[in-house]
Length: 181
Image (cartoon, rainbow, N blue to C red):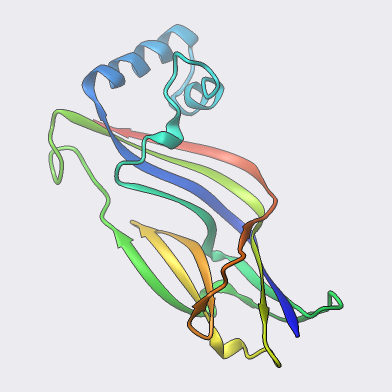
């Protein structure tokens, strides 16, 4: 029997990377010219050749998915009936930790650090498994972590990654950006 597994809730695309001083100066000048804050400048300039693409500033971290603490996993049978659901934070997890970077601490004072979160809501992953009967104890989540942000990146069933996972349907709810110099 085939079962569909999907995760609904809140999550984000999270990036963190280093920026040289010239790029930081260009951002500050652009923000002053457009009279905007960092978030507005990066979002509105996303399709401009004059503004960097925030999602490409990811030399330290880049992950997209549901938040571990703000999402629910669902399992449906072939008829579309939900046969099981649980908050993701209650499942077995495997964490992959990435150390946050800060100027002067673990990188050069010569560069700044840009951290961005495109906060989203909706269905983050959808996949299928084939098994005679579904056993929730065989589910495990893979998590990428940056500081206190835990992003679900994959689902395993019986220690095998669900290999047909598709990114679901989400909508952007908020955008946050932090520039540390």
